[in-house]
Image (cartoon, rainbow, N blue to C red; front, top):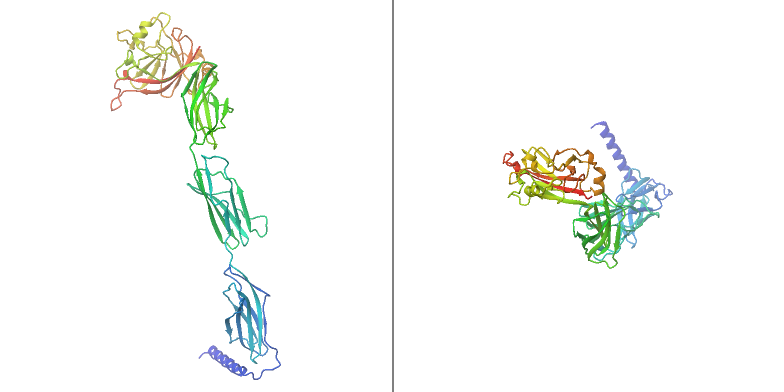
Amino acid sequence: MNKHSIISLLAWCFAAVSLAACSDGEGIDPSSAEPVVAYPYETLVADLNKADNLPVVAIVKSEAGLRSVALAILTDGGETIPVSTVTEFFDRHSFSLSEKINYKSDYVSAVVSAEDLLGRRAEAALPIRIIDIVEPPVIVFSPESWEYDETVGGDLPNTRFVVTSEVALKSIEMFRVSTEGQTQYGGTVTGGDTDPWVRYEFDALIAYGENDRGFRVRAVDSYDQVRIVSLPVKYKTVPPPTVTPAAETIVAERDESKAVVLDIESMAGVVKVELFLRKGKTVGSDPVLSKTYADKPNTLAFAESLAFSDDVSGVRAVVTDNVGRSTSVDIKAIVGMEFVEDAVIGGIGFTDGNASQPGVYSLFSLKYMKTLPMTEVLDNATSTSADVDICYYNMSNKTFRIYSPDGEKKSEYKAADGRTLSNLPAAVLTRYQLRNDIDFDSATAATITEQIVAGQLTLSRIDANVGDVIAFKTGGKSSAGGNRVGILKVMDIVSYTTETGAPKDTQKSTVIVSVKFPKE
C-alpha cells in the first residue's frame, strides 16, 4: 500500500470516529447557537417558459454541527413535497445547498430545515414567484378572409389584423402568398409605441390581384414563440374589355372627318372610351375625344367622328371598365394618300398573266394602285401618258431589282403579241432611292413629302431586299401624274427553285410590296 492510500485510510477512520462521537452529542457545548438557514435572494423567480431557471440555493450554518438538511416545496394548496435530505457533510458546521427544481405553477415556497447534533431544528422558507406558461402571440384578421369580385366592382377593402401578446413582442413579418410563391410585404416590424410592446395593429390597402392566394403574418414574442396565421385571399377577375374596330385602317382625305367605329364588350361594364391621335410614331398624351358612361354598359356600339390631318398615322382607342382594367387598340390611318398593302408584282413571266397566280401581272400602275396586263397598258398608252410605273425583275435568284419602265430590261418584258416596253409611245421615267431611314408604318403624307426630295431620286433601277423602304418619283408621262413622290416597302420576295436551291423559273418570281403615295 502506497503512502497516499495510507493517508486516505487514516483520514477516513478519523472521520468515522469523529462522526460516531458527535452523533451522541458528547463533547458539544449545549450553549452553542442553533442552526441558521439563509438564502442569497429574497424571492426566487421561476419562469416556466424557460428551461434554465435558478436552483434553490441555501447556506446552512451550525456551531454544534449538522445532522441533516432537508429541502421541501410548499404548494398553494398547502401540500408539502419532499425534495431531498442530506446527512453526510464535508463540513458539519457549514453547508451550501443547491438543488435544481422542476418548477410547477402551484409552487409558492421552498422550505429548508436543518437539525444539529444536539437535535435542535431550524427552518426557513424562500418565497417562489412562478411565471406561468404564456401562449404564443395571437393574430386576428378582421374579417377572416379577403374577397373581391370585379363583376361587382367598387373599392378594394383594406387588410386588417391585430397582433396581441402576453409578453413583449420581438418581431412581426408579413408575406404575400401568390401562385408564384411567397414574398415579404414591407420590412420586419421590431418595435411599437409601448414598453413592453404587446400589441400591433395593421389597417392598409393592399392591391391584391388574380394571382394572390393569401396574406401571411408571422409574430415572434420575447420567448421566441412563433405564431403564423394566414388570411385567405380570393380575387375574382373578369377579362378586360374586348375592343374590335370596324376596320383596321381608316382612309380619309386631308382634314376630312371620319368615324372611328368600335364594337366593345365588357363583363365589368364600360365606364370610359378615349381616342388618341398618332402622328408618326408618337401617340398624343391627351385624348382628342373622351366619353364616359354612367350606366356601365356591357356592350357598346361606339361611333364617333374625328378630323384627320395629313400628319396623322393612326388612332389609339383606350376602353376602361368599371374595375379600372383598360384595353387599347391601334387603328392605322391613311390620310391624303393612296395606299395598297401587300400588292403582288410578278416577274417577266407575268406580263399578261400566269396561270400559277391569276390576277397578278408584271406592270404596276400608281394610278390604279395595282398591276395591269401588259397588252392593256400598251394598247392604252399615248404619247403623253402610260399606265405603268414600277417593274420587278429576278436576276437568277441572286439579285432582285425594282426597275423603271425605261430601264435596260425593258425589252425583256414581252406582251402576248410580242411587243415590249420599248414599244411604249411615252417613256415613263420612274426614279428610285433607298430610304431605310423612313419608318414605313408610321409615315404620313406630310412626312413623306417633307422627307423625300424629288431631285435626289435618280436611279432607274434599285436592288430590293425584304424589309427595304424605297422612295420613288413618278416620271412626267406617268398616268398618275409627274414628279410625285411616294414610298414602297418590300414585304416579301418569292423565288421558285429546285430542291437543291438552284433557280427553277425566275420568270415566275414575285415581289410583295406595300405602297404609300401622297395625293396631289
